[in-house]
Amino acid sequence: MAKTKQQQGKGDGTKLIVSNRRARFDYHLDDSYEAGLALVGTEVKSLRGGKGSLTEAWVKVDRDGQAWLMQAHIPEYEYGNRNNHDPVRPRKLLLHRRELERLRSAVETKGVSLVPTRLYFRSGRAKLEFAVGRGKNVADKRQTAAKRDAQREIERALKQRR
Image (tube, rainbow, N blue to C red; front, side, top):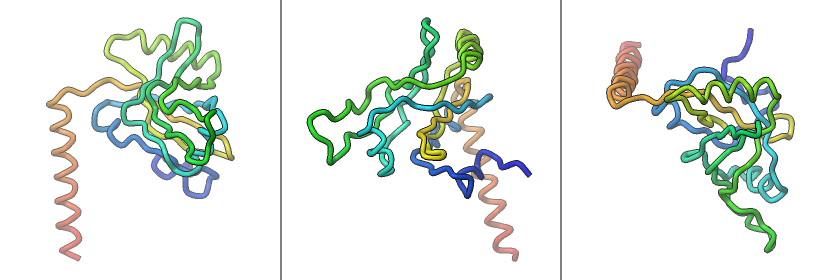
């Protein structure tokens, strides 16, 4: 049986660093992609410590056919020297050419953006999972919150019944 995205990270050699929980609330997420990250040494050490943030991050595909992770915050390595990295510098994503072409055509559609969802280590390599997302409006967000509250009430009622 194949593992779902939520089950990954349990026994398959992945170590979750950061998850962007807000992305599912703010966007309708469609296709998800996995990309490697081109990082410097102090960034890797900081990530191994479990530090980082994807809250304001987004993925950009430029005209040269390169994908970049923008505004992701990886704090400076506390034991680094004066050659430490910039915490919010653009980071290159490592993708196949066909994936880049597919992403570029998806982004050209109005109202679509590439949203980072998870940052993790797989077999010792830093990976980023991101999805093609379409922004939700306020009514959709309210509906999502109402569904979540209703599900919570159902679970609470079933728990009391047992």
